[in-house]
Length: 408
Image (cartoon, rainbow, N blue to C red; front, side):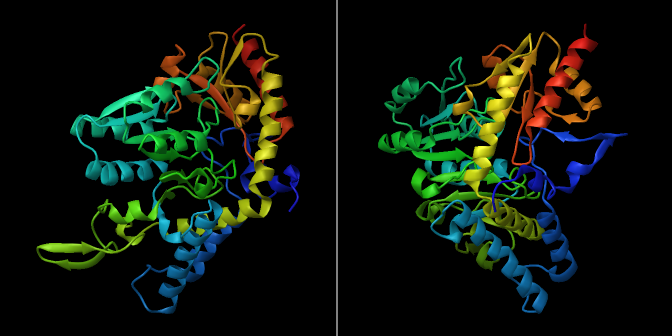
């Protein structure tokens, strides 16, 4: 399938919606959540209409179909990120739960007071708060790789921190605010040379770039379906087999056990060991359909389109007097443009843009420390995906000039 953005847009029914009379939506909030193609919506509808049943328990036709679809999706996800085995894919609710799973299982089993975890100043709260909680409970030490003025990480400081013998390095592959694409393979190699394990928050990279866990040699990687054309309520944790097998269970209950007695239990093998209770079955089917959709287009094509979009967006936005864009140049970032505008509060910018059908996000984007780093409380964020167009960028620019007119 050759990349044709106008053809791709036809796959997303919500893009035809009028959000105000005569005003179609211009959706520039894909970093928060992506829209869903018809194939994903129909895959989930078909599951509920034809195959709905609980998994791994029944021997009737519906149960066997449901189980097969649930596990087939896992295989697709593993292939999408080039995991050696589908058993290394753990279904979770989202990226946040995936990182918490590592913090509650591997970290609590292996870290003690004084052990060092290295994070960065650009992390989403999902990759900060679990470690804060661990620090309060266990006394582990947290240190942070600084973000420089250009939106890039200071790798010289990272190198100096590695001399302190960290046990874990956890960082985002792509910033949800700055769009910065961090040199993950290099940072992971450096961490391993220092004897540390790695966690990669790939919520913003897996939907937009070709990500290969074997080439990265990452120990754990977390991502979500809803940011990659899939449903909400389901995500994945990839982990190296030896680590997952050695980790204790996260949640207790049905489906994660091999044997239960009144006074003891034995957990089952991975991946089921970490998937207690009835899971998000229809959502897994949607996750698999989203992977099929993106694979049919090609992640290199998606990435190339988004690079073209962000280049054009930065060029147009930089024309606007009083607008300040945060983050690196287009060649070092994904399709994210966060900005402030002439002392006008970001929420006011977003609200006025909404009157013209333009959906952007305003606030701290669950990255308060990063905003504090730049001396601001919030930004307006426009984000782009495979269905975004240059015409939508032009309308965003027109909308910002209308904001300026409203505020004089």
